[in-house]
Length: 130
Image (cartoon, rainbow, N blue to C red; front, side, top):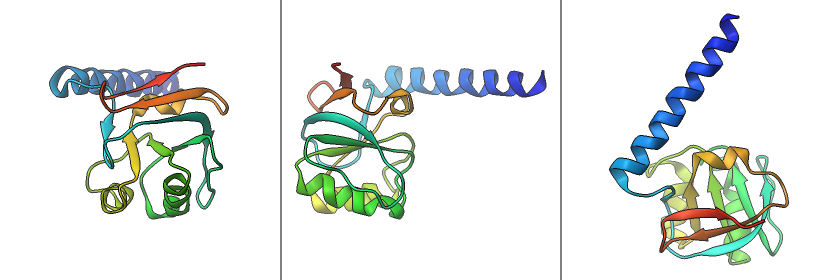
């Protein structure tokens, strides 16, 4: 039906945008905060939730409702992976000011809790290791 067609079209547009990002910008992940790496188990976060040691947070956007997650990530030497956001998003500014790790990686929406990931600034990518 029409709804399935709209979803398929939206997905195709998103994939094309990601392809352009890789081709034009030359990397898979956009580093919005500190350019340093970390690794840990994925924890998909809701507004107001925090990380424990050994976890890397996945958030849907870089809005102020995820500041607690940013503080906990910085405290534990971890980072956040944001599905959508940009350099002027609230958390991107906070990440730069606090030397926190924040990466925009649209594919993060497909990660599952508990998967092991590595945020690798040298390769400019996020890798799933388990």
